[in-house]
Length: 107
Image (cartoon, rainbow, N blue to C red; front, top):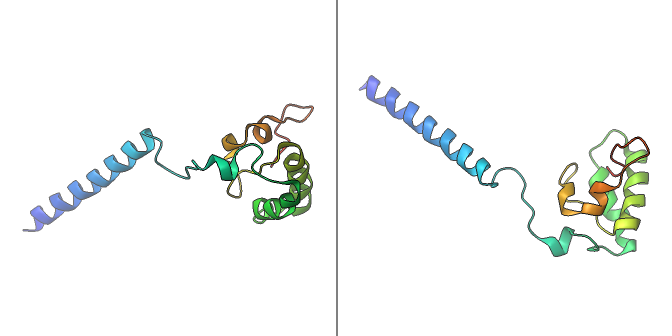
């Protein structure tokens, strides 16, 4: 009986791992934002930038520089990506604006 329980538990763990790998391979893992009208280019008005940047920068230790650059990027691109970091692909302008050194300008 103990062997059966151990084999059953291992099979269950293997199935869970396989499901996770399959979902990740098909792009269903992590955060997935398909709502382009809410986050895409031009989805914001300029008066919405401070509140969206406050959300974006709320979990960083470098709040002031994050807010400065986020608002600069938002006013140019009229969008701020969802979440606290990453997800920049939903806003190409925000994602592609680079510093003189070639690093990302927008947080």
